[in-house]
Image (cartoon, rainbow, N blue to C red; front, side, top):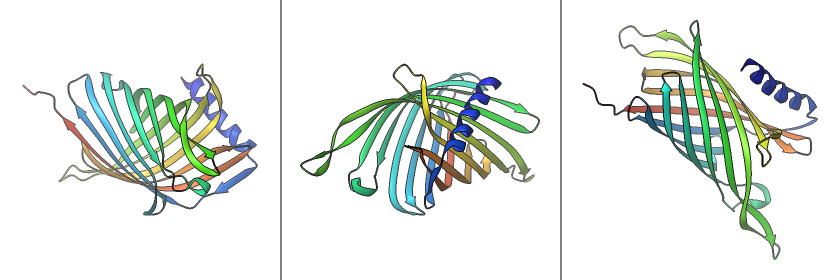
Length: 247
C-alpha cells in the first residue's frame, strides 16, 4: 500500500515539475451537503449535494448530485457503488450551453489511526458519460456523449484539537490530497488529470452533525503542457442518521 501511495505522489509531482504554463484562476466557492442513513450494521445509503460557483458567492458553475449504496465490512472499511449527476455551465465560447455528466462508480474506503491522528483512504473508479459540444451551421450545439474512465485516490488526515467539557462539542482540523488519473479503455492510467489539496477546520456538534470551512487548491491538466491552478473556499455541512433498531 505504501508503495502504491508513493507511486501516485511521484506521478503527481512529476507532472507539476514538467508543467511550463500555468493559468491562475480567480477564487471560487463550493457548498456541500453530505448525508448518510445507516440502515443496519452493514448497510447504509449516502448522498452528496454540491453547489459550485465560478466566483465567490456568484456565477453558477456546477451542480452535483451523488447517491450511493454502501456495505460496511467493519467500522474501518467499506465498499460503495454510486451514481453522479453533474450539471455544468461552461465558460468561453460555449457559455450558455449547459452540459450534463452521468457517471457510475465503485469505491473502497478504509481508515486507521496513529496516535491522535485518524487517516482515511478512498479509492474510486469512475465510468463517465459527458455530453459533447460540436459546431453545426456555425453554431455550438450538443451532440451525443463522450465516454471515459477515471481513477481517484484520496488520503485524509484529521485530528480533534479541542473538546468543550460541558457540551461535548469538538473542534477539529483535517487535510487531504486527492489525485485524479485519466484512463484508457482497459483502465490503465494514461495521464495526470487533476489534484486537490485541502486544509480545513470544523465544529462537531456530535458524531452525526458537523460543519466545516476550508481552503482547497485545484490543479488541472488542460492538455498541451498547459495547467491551471484554482483557489476554492469550501463550506461543508454533514448530517447523518441512524435507523438501526435498538433493543
